[in-house]
Length: 146
Image 1: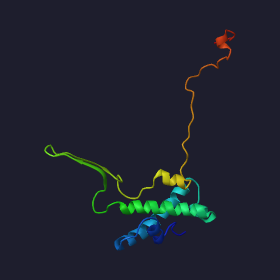
Image 2: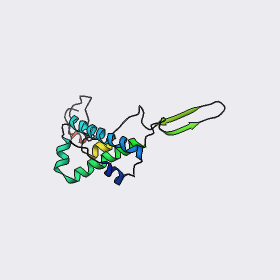
Image 3: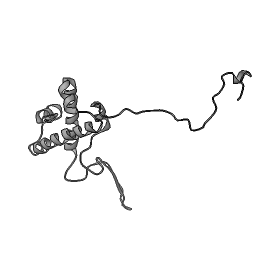
Image 4: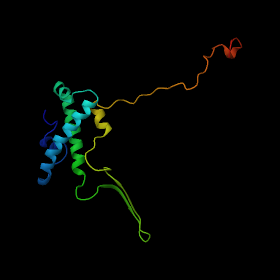
């Protein structure tokens, strides 16, 4: 049970890593790979078997792992990462939106869907009123009990 991507894959698919990012990236690759395994177990699948069976699926797993690690590496560690900031002057007001509310690692639903680990949306309807079945001949005057 190795990682789904290596440091070389991260540098090839994303960008060259700085010296201080390499150790963090190595640790993140292991954490992300294990997190994806746990997500697969939740839906009754074995991700390692799926990767071993298909070269194309292994490539998708590598891509998803690199995406998650790259996003986590882009998240600032020395201050709160904000995606939007608004400030005012005299009455002083400050507001902003965090990149990752609560911080830490997160896996998007789209990434889980790429791995086949997210259930598709279901739809359906429930009849909440118990109406009698309509006679199709009702409007022609030949209907019986409507």
